Image 1: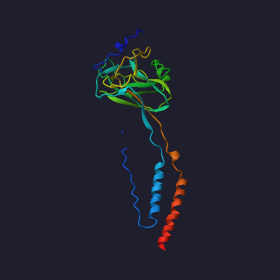
Image 2: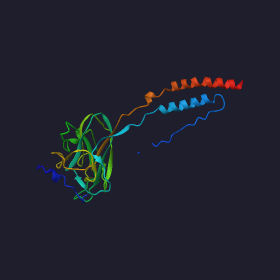
Image 3: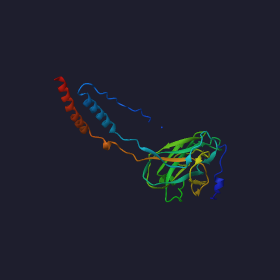
Image 4: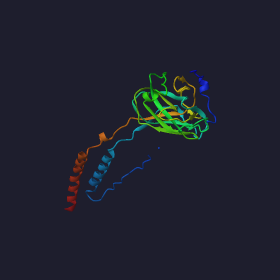
Length: 262
């Protein structure tokens, strides 16, 4: 195979194509009657304890991003298919669970030939280092930590591909294309996005037989996950403890009630 010049491979295609949770302020008005305060205190304590139960939401983190997405509705970008694949390398330092991958793309509805099944794929492939490359279309599904197909649309939109895969510390490449995971469509990534830093983009023009660094610019790719999940259940008293707390309040309430009746 004759390796194409990276600049030639990357020629853009012009026409191919969420709390606001209201404060639940419980107004425990003080009763003028003796015994009102202990009962109100008990209610407040039980409500507070019940609020401790459950699990706090996992913190959603951007594990890696090339920048910020530009306006959607675009029809110009860097094309990809079963020959042209591209992506970006990144590193993580902690074990994380993915939530989604985001990609600003569109379907090349004016591409020559069959448009396939209107789907593309993404995969996250472990790398030996930040200078290494992923494999070929034949080997990527067997080595990827995550892979899935997704529907293409026209004009451009920021596609969100859900994932629950776990990544351990190391180097990875997130790649996009067709020819794997059942995807046979033709798409493109827009180049109207804002890049932050110096993303380590990679590209191939022969289905992954040979990869090159660079070749694309201003492509928006984001890898997101969760970390730092804190379960509040461990700190919540067991039912027996709540019952015991109630017993501590009730004698005082009963005593004050007897005094009132005398």
